[in-house]
Amino acid sequence: MTFDWKHIIAGPCAAESEEQVWTTAQAIAQSVPDEIRHKLIFRAGLWKPRTSPTTFQGIGDEGLAWLQRIQRELDLPVATEVTQPEQLHRAIEAGLRHLWVGARTSANPIQVQALADALQDHDCSQLTIYIKNPVNNDPALWIGNIQRFLSVTGSNNQAPEVYAIHRGCNHRPCWDMAYFLRQQMPTIPLLLDPSHMSGDANRIDCLCKNAVQLQYDGLMVEVHNHPSQALSDAQQQLTPAQFAAILGSLTEEEEATQLTWLRQMMNEVDDELWSVVARRMEVSRRIGEYKREQGMEIVQPTRYEQMVTSRLAWAQSHDLDPHTVRTIMDALHQESIRKQK
Ligand code: PEP
Ligand code: MN
Image (tube, rainbow, N blue to C red):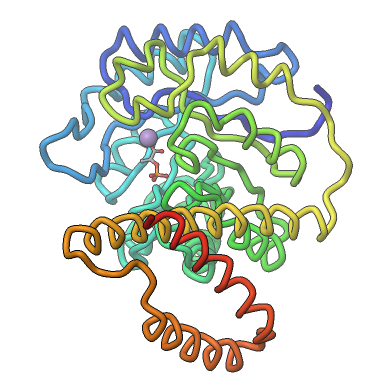
């Protein structure tokens, strides 16, 4: 593997016990290909921003000592997520030099600014801050967050090193967002997080290949010693062996052009398009059920003509050819009738 990645960040979604982080870190360090061992950073979340208050919220401060041991005894730098200034202070005081701002925090510029301001109290010369894209597809906010950290100066008058992490939205890549960032901030190193991007351990492999193809500067991947027992994000975590196998299987790709990016965007739009078609057919099936129960006719020409008329007017205002729109609508309508029957 010869492509030039700056950092490979790997580790569990959350630190759960000392045994879990230690075993996972050791296994990752031992199994990754030799040529990337020096680029490896171990990740583990201590303070987890979770959707539901009834799930595991992270081990908190107690896990700092576990992460310190990994740095000391495995000679492996550790990264964790910070969501508030107090967490940032405690992580830096514990000797962590790699901190990330998660997607939920990244959606709130006031919280991001508070974190950036908190850095003024610290020597930033050895720090790297990673900014994930916000949970919503808002590339301008992502860029704004990066600028907030680029313009902070620590106690030694130096800014931290700033990386971006592309983790997508709603388990979709949103390649357009990363392309925009690349265009606007070509010097900011960009990592891909295939775990949160897909939410599915089976899709990590393919997304890592995309990262090589699109010349990302590295990866952040969730790796757990027993993924099925993980207290958070169980379905998207890889075992250390699976992770090492994926890294070992990656091969150099041709240099990415604008066309490479545009084709990725096109594939994503097609994925969305076909899932919308599938959703439409599911609604059709339910309408069919209703009509059958009520003894109604399946085909209702007046309703269809109304739909066509309003859609053709819409097509005109969106620079779409009315004949093409009509052809697509007729095909969808025929399929809906088939579904309802
Ligand atoms: C995480 O990295 O575990 C995490 C919470 O990710 P995100 O902020 O991307 O959802
Ligand atoms: Mn996670």
